[in-house]
Image (cartoon, rainbow, N blue to C red; front, side, top):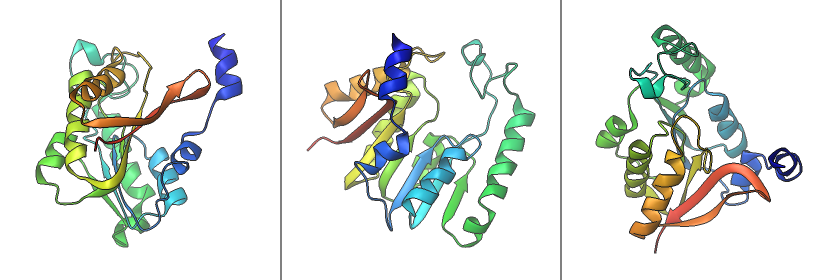
Length: 199
């Protein structure tokens, strides 16, 4: 049944974002870059004035990370993370020289502690555990422009992170500091959640 809904009601996330964000001449932040594939799509589709990419590229220790893309498991290790970091820099070499793309190899907490920019769009796809996503939303709200949007990946998807993305969004809804513009459901299948500051 789930496969049927996915087949007929699936929506591309770039198309989804375009329904809620224009992007021209904007400042965009992506938390969680991995190999830079979606970062490239953001750049090509929205042509931002500046795209900032944040990822520690660390193979985290701990049993909970065993099945993650960036954990100490069969999926990855630190050597591979180092390789990804180099590849992302190569992928955006031209844009880095043009000062259109800036890459920070650090955790999102470390980035936000020294950040001086405000953003039109913040795409959160970093550590999916509840406490990390909760802080990413909290920090993002501090640096989001008044009409800006925050988009979170893997919404309503349990995964190894025990549905941490969904739980963090629900937490902030209860705090009444965000409002959901649109979110994944069976008839709108994309596992994204778009939020704005609660006014």
